[in-house]
Length: 201
Image (tube, rainbow, N blue to C red):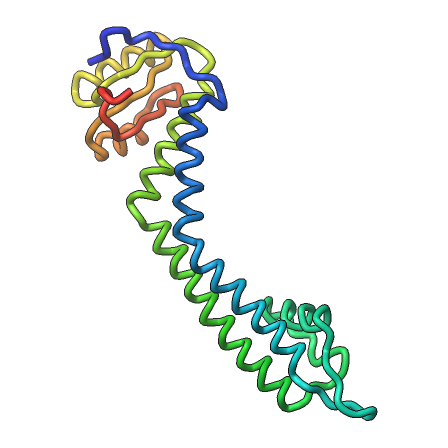
């Protein structure tokens, strides 16, 4: 069935509702990834400073790598490029520090990637992304459209009839399986759908 006033105008791109949904997804990612990113930055910073402090050996005597050279070495080491020991051969202390830094980096990356994979499986994140995709698809509709509340038997018949008449419509249904079935429907036009309560503006 449709709402009392089924013909609505599509919101313009960049409306507050779309911006809020986009911000919610970004905020969720930044909140969950904050600690892993801080850990990675801290590991990299400690690795660079430690390498600069490790004494090296040269024919002229003891030398210390500059911060820029240490940053360069740790950058190609962390990205697994591995150019070798430059600008000159490392001392045992420097090799030990680089080895320790490699293991610390592996642990940091494993933590960050594990957190990211867990976030991608999180129901709250999936929900935020679904709402964001729905809002973008609705915002692209440049003509009046019907809002179909519920996609049961009556809603499906109504949707097929509207599609035959060339009328655009969007669907809100409380049940996610009905929304999933709608994605496989044979409608001529794109039908944005979201598992949500139509009573919620």
